[in-house]
Image (cartoon, rainbow, N blue to C red; front, side):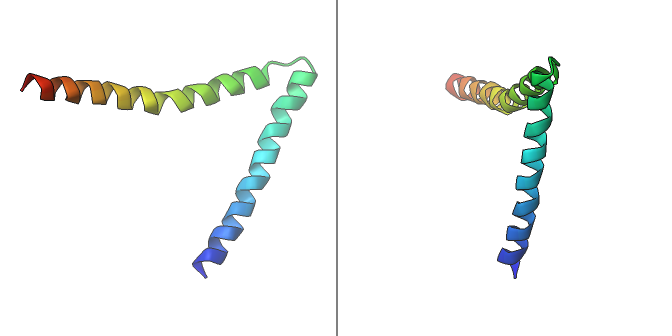
Length: 67
């Protein structure tokens, strides 16, 4: 039953991805800048967790090496 629920939920996620991909690509073809801004936002959201993890890792490594 739970597997069936996950499969149904997954279909909705794939449908949204197709819609999100169509809007920026049609905007870029029409000369708009929505796609460029969307790509920049995606890269920003991708980078933030890795930067935070690196900062905390460096902090705890230095703290442990001083002790």
